[in-house]
Image 1 (tube, rainbow, N blue to C red):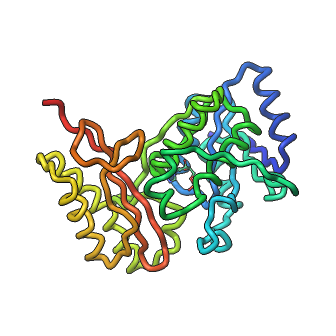
Image 2: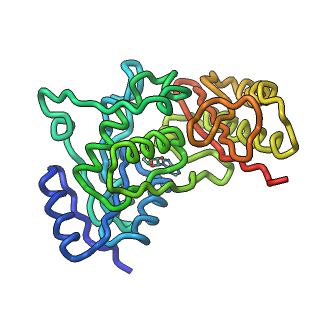
Length: 288
Ligand code: AMP
C-alpha cells in the first residue's frame, strides 16, 4: 500500500490548522514527541499511534533546554530526510519540525518543574534536564492538543515525570507508554547508539546484561538489594563502562528500594567511551 501524504509543518499555526481540520472530522489525534534521528523504536510508537488515531502527528525537535552545558546538543544527530521517510513508512500524517525560535521566542521565561520524581537518578546526573523536558513536552502538547501522546519506556523516568505533570496540571491527554524496542542482542535502540564504535557497540551490551542479571537474581529470591546493586555493576565494570547508577527503584516514584516489592524497575546509566546510555527493565515478582 502506498504511504499517504505527509505534511511537514514548521510553524505552530500550520499544526493548529491541520489538527483543527482533523478534529472537525471527528478524528482522534495522536502525538509522538521525538528529537529526530529516528529508529525502529520511534517507528513502533508511530505505528501504535496509527492503530489508535485518525491523525498522527510526530514532533521532531532537538530541545536545547534539556541538554547540559557539557552534553551532546551540538553533535546530536539531525537526519531530517531519513526521519521523514521513517515517519511516512510508519504511517504519520504530520511532522512538526519547528526552528528553535518558534519554541523559544525572545523573552521566553516560563518553565515547568515536576518535584520528587525528577530528583533522583537522571535528575542527579543531568541537573535541569527534566525541567527542559517537562517544559518542552507541555508546549508540544499545547501546540498539538492531542487526545493521546505516545512515549517509550526506554526513557522510564521521563515517562513518569510526564505522567505526573499531566495529572498535576489536568492536561486532557492520555499518556500511552510503549515497550522498549531492542536490537536482536538486547541493546536498547537509541539515537545515541550511532555514536558507538564497533568495540563500544559490543561493550554497550553490558547495560542490558546488568538489567538481566538484576531480574534473574530477584526472581531467584535475592533480598539484599545493596548486594544486588553491586552485582549489577559487574558486567558494566567488565566492559569498562563509567557507571552513573545501577539500581532498583519503585516504578512510580523512582525512589531507590531497600527491599524487594512486587513491582520494581531496574535502571542503569553508564558512559561507554564518550557516549552516555540509559536502559531499564520492569521486574514483577510472581505473587506467593
Ligand atoms: P527521543 O527522540 O530519544 O527523545 O525519544 C522520543 C520518544 O521515543 C521517547 O518517548 C522515547 O522514550 C521513545 N524511544 C526512544 N528509544 C526507544 C526504544 N528503543 N523503544 C521504545 N521507545 C523509544
